[in-house]
Image (cartoon, rainbow, N blue to C red; front, side, top):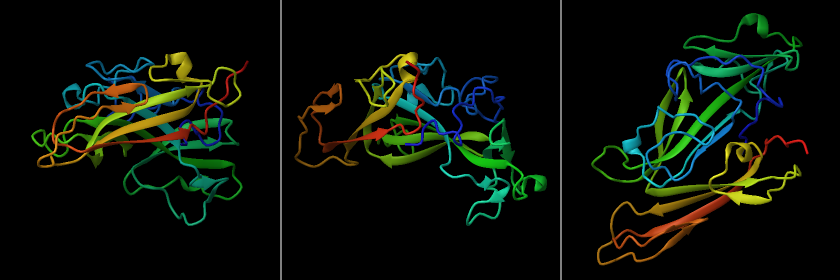
Length: 267
């Protein structure tokens, strides 16, 4: 997982934050293009949309989120530059329209945000081989479980994402039947790149030393199965989900991913 990858730069703390048209937090907070906190987490949502790091995610509607599920966001650049040292990468001939880019000059000595609107392209002066200018696509994703799919009446739990698309955050739903999502972060306490403990509710300082994420999903059938009663108890990492006693078949799927660009903390 390329979370926290910012074009090979160790930090974007000195990069001036820019505003997008419709952000995910209150006006003036400039959350989407603030890369100082590459991952954010809300553990077992109840009613508050305040993350561990203190961001209030106003782009989400509390009434649409399944209670007790986790909310997780990540920010990163693409794994490959669109423009490198003034030249397009292989197979690229122009900028992607309505896309935010991280612009680097002189190998990262100067960093800035650059938005390409509709029918626009990179400045022609930047596209000249050997001029020490790079452009990297920037991506923001905020994952959560919505308590419906296409309309509130269908009651189909669905994995959705708020993502930066053009100059605004938009909603895109990915998979129906995802009833719960739990995230556990592997915390590195001795800066060797290996997790020493896993926490479902790390504090802000521990979030900064996370090197691995365990992701658990509880998958539910779209329709109830006639004659079937589900009395099973499910484990999603440290969370236990009690028997629903309904007609839906469920399964737990999980994966562990390395946060490949976590910056090791000094001893």
